[in-house]
Length: 50
Image (cartoon, rainbow, N blue to C red; front, side):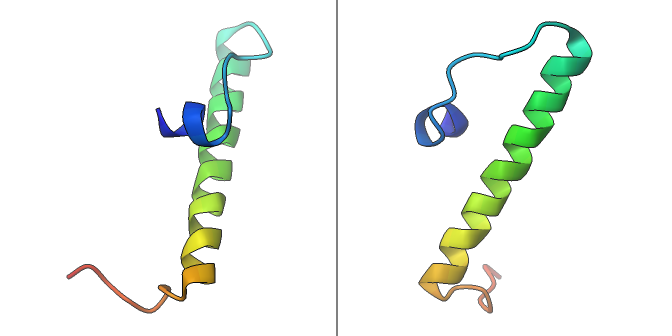
């Protein structure tokens, strides 16, 4: 749901299991990089939850 809303992802561009898996992996990596970017900008890189 976060990927669909935050990154405006609506549908896969390619057909086939391998292509869908590759696009899903790229979306996950992009989501993590975006999350890390926001964390760096907020200055929360040295803090831990526990």
